[in-house]
Amino acid sequence: MADSTPLLKVRNLRVAYPIRSSVLMRHIGDNVAVSDVSFDLHQGETVGLVGESGSGKSTIARTIIGLVKASDGSIEFEGKDIARASWRQLKSIRREMQMVFQDPYASLNPRLTVRDIIAEAWRVHPGVVPRGAWTSEAKALMDRVGLNPDYSDRYPHQFSGGQRQRIGIARALALRPKLIVCDEAVSALDVSVQAQVLNLLEDLQADLDLSYLFISHDLSVIEHLCDRVLVLNRGVVVEQGTVDQLFDNPQDDYTKRLLAAVPVVRPWLEPT
Image (tube, rainbow, N blue to C red):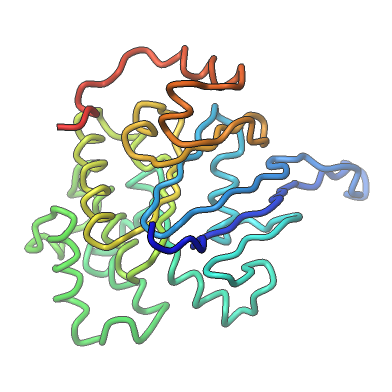
């Protein structure tokens, strides 16, 4: 990483959901989902968030992307504080951050063709691609993610799960972002298809200098794809470090238990 300035800087992030009484709906407490989380992510880097279900991984991802409001702390993207940005500034920042969701079918509008799914981003953010070039650009993105451009008029149900996830990746690339948040992006796919999608993500990162925030409960995937890792337990970061540090010399008991629970090393994730 040539530039030491973080692309994304998260400091003391806290996310809490209010608990209200059944009578008069008074605020009687908070359910804290994420507490005091801090980390940096640099251009071209992949940072992984790992932990069991309910550990706060997805809450962090959705807070960074703006789908969940932070209760406290700061999130800076290229030096701009997302929490204090105006609506216009936030729209510009969100163009630089896109998300690939876990379910490659539920996250796609079944009423739209693949071309229109990809072009939807340009409707929201006019000026990125001229309207007259939407079809050709959508086909170029399909080709880039390994889909046949001739299928641009087809609907999501006409594709396999792995192909649908490629559509989701193409949609994320449409706005030419710097950061892509992958929320369990391969967990719903068959093992062999996971490998293909992970290889695609690596190739795109190398070609486009993308940064990834990669959320997963699968440590084999994290080890293969990530540069650094944060281990979360009940909304708190219990350990963080490089992939080698985490896998070769874990310090926290929770991390050790997670690693001990990994059944086998998947040969398809080994570098060739």
